[in-house]
Length: 385
Image 1: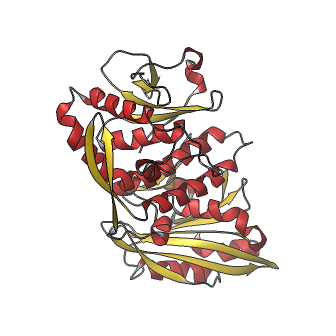
Image 2: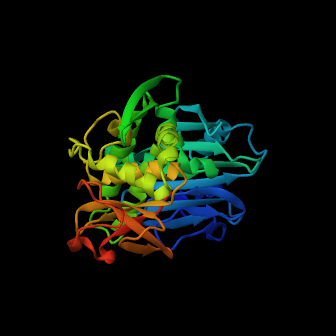
Image 3: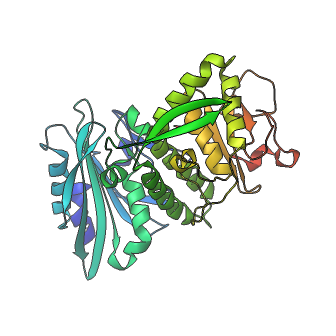
């Protein structure tokens, strides 16, 4: 056994404990309902323990090594103790702190250690699993001279942990540690279908959402020449959806309460929102991603097709409608799509017929798209949550 294997043996999961997907999906753990990790693509499981409670991942996309560890209930008194103990097993040193996340006290940390002659830098998270199911610890690191390049990838990995059903609709623990929720609100007024809707966002929502968009874009770009670029795109939008949902949940609730009483059905409501987004000013963000963070759109900022379509997807799923995002490399375009009993041109995904919604041309209804963008194989579906 090599020295590196000896270092990792005390914190390493067997493949038998994982339910690995065939496509870009979240991996889950047997016996732990709703606990999963939305892993970046192109990893190799390079180490495991016989108990099926830990595994090590090595990435081809970036010089990153990661460890996921599940501890049984009662092993540690807190998530922070679990995190600190795991880092000590790596002979790593660095600060850690407690973070409130999902109504539980979790922990995050940064660390460094030397392996042979190479200085390593990394970050880590830990969270209790609800209902007394134990604790999950995730650790990731890279060579110190690759830290700037790999940091978005590492923090994206740490933010991709889900510990219960509700965490599919809330920011990850790393983002929560940087932008903790405070009762500091910004009142906003929207006009949709001639009706005035008063709602609000947290004052930190715009900055926090922009942080997630930029980080996830940098992570996705690592797959630009990869055969798994589609999976990377899907994960990029899933991560933005997860962060955006709870930020816009109040707005979705207020919009629904104001408009729904005047709508015939869900498609009629969705049409009012589609018409609203078609009136937005068309503007590409002056950032590397070109994607407008959704809170900024509600504050009056400009937007492009994918941010508008994502906004519709978030608001409509918040209203309990089945909405997905469609993105196309060939057409350089994005659409929102909904299930509906109404007539119109549709694509079929996962056995369901979806009507497409074009957000960049005014006057169009659900089920109408450009004739030269009608090839379904050129559209990549992003299913939420």
